[in-house]
Length: 353
Image (tube, rainbow, N blue to C red; front, side, top):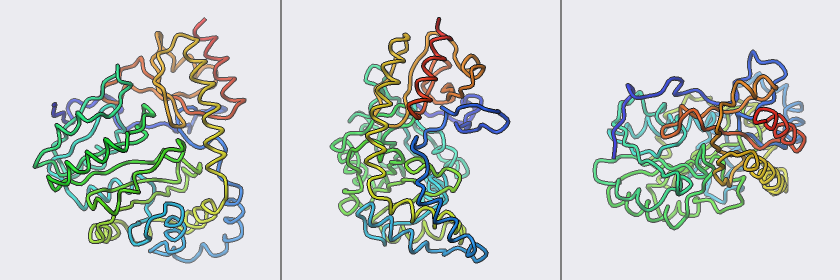
C-alpha cells in the first residue's frame, strides 16, 4: 500500500485525449467516443428547439432525468444530471470531503483532480499487468475504517477491463461495514453489453454510480453525465453541490432525443466489438502487447516510440505515461470507423517497418 502525493505526479498528470485544437486534418484516436457519432435524432431536436434556448435551462432537468430513469431502470429520485462525468466526480468530492480515498492504478486521473481541492490522503492500489490489470478481491484488504471513499472504474480507463459483479458486491459489503462510500465509474459500460452495477443500488446505499452520454452517444461537447445513488439525502446534497443551471438547455434536449433512439446502443456494441477485434489482431501482429479490452478503446505496449511518428502520419493517439503504473511505452487508442481503423493499422505498419 503506497501513499502518493502531488510531488510524485508525472508531467501532464491531468492531460486527457481529444485535444485536437491546433492540429489540422488529424484523425483522433486519443478520445474514446462512439464511432457511430451522435444520433441524428439529437441533431434534429436541437434545430427544432433552438428558439427556446434564450430561456434558462430546467435546473432539475426533469425530462432528461425521466429519460435516464427509463433507460437505466432506476428510480428518478436516485438520479442527478450533471455537466459531464467530471462535474459528477467534483460534486461527490465536495459533498463527502473525504480525508482518505482509495483509487486503483492505472486509472483515470480525473478522480484525483476532483479530490485535490479537499486535500485527502490518496491510497493507491496497484493493478497487476500479468493479470491484465484486473481489479481482484485483493483490493478489499485496502478497505478499512478511515477510508471515506473507494473509486472503481468499470470498464477501467485505460485498460478496458470490466470488474466482476461478484467482486464488486464483495467490495460494497466490505465498504459498508466501514461506512465507506464506493463510487463506480461506468462511463464505458454501455459499450460492453455487460450488466451494470445499478442493479445493486437498492441493496447498497453506499454505492454511487456515475455514467455519461459523452462517450456512449458521442456528445462530448455537451458535457452531459449523471450520478445515481439510493441514499436520497446524499442525492439532494449532490444536487445542491452544483451550479443551478449546470446542464445547458441544448445538452438536455440532445440527451432526451439521443436516449429515445431505439437500437442505437445495440448497434454500437456490435460495431465496436467487430472493429475492436480488427484493431487488437492488427496490433498483436505488429508486435504490440495488447490488453484484451471490453470497451471502445485498447491499451497496448509498443517496443518503440509511436506518438510523434503516428502524428506525422495524421493520427493522434493517447500517450499513457501520465497514468500511474504505466510508462512511455504504453498507448491507448479508440475504436473508430472501419475505414479509419484500416488506415490507422496501415500507417502503424509503416512506423513499425
